[in-house]
Length: 246
Image 1: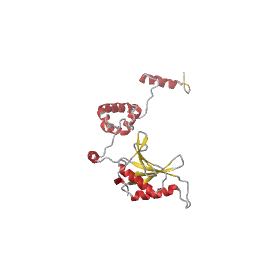
Image 2: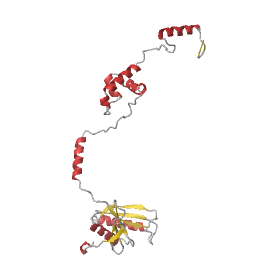
Image 3: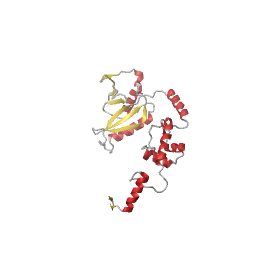
């Protein structure tokens, strides 16, 4: 008779026979020290988890909570959940929201401020296209001149414009400057802002007015004509003499 290391001796055979008579198994080995408590801990943890199922459904159960309920150390509970029961106590099983102590008062204040909040005007802006590379005799480009002049205009005419300006480089080799107006729903204010831009800056092209809802809503030509977009076409808008800017 042989084992994994070679022929088995008579003394080893006698030990195996005695072990089989005592344990009815040749694979069972006598362990030294205290017996394992893993099975008992796993049973206690499983029973505690079942009794706390209502609490666990709300995401409030944890390995530390089970340890306090059963009296077993936190490490033993963690090993029973993770290794024996194949659970993951360190992972959230439910979505949880951590609420501050003054959550109710914050909610009441937020609802109150929302009810009293007036609707904000729609954002709109005039667009001016400039060449960032074409320089004059003084070494200034169209973009340098336009940005300086329009910034001063927006700072000066706060009743028509809001600061700051917005710049965007386009694929056609130009840069667009957006001059934001105070109210995009006030047609009179939009026309006045277009005239103000024309008076302070020489721009021999049509200017287009954009909003966050439409591609382009208004157009202002160099000769002072004002158009509105109607069904994908431009319609001339006429005003009374009292609407002049100056």
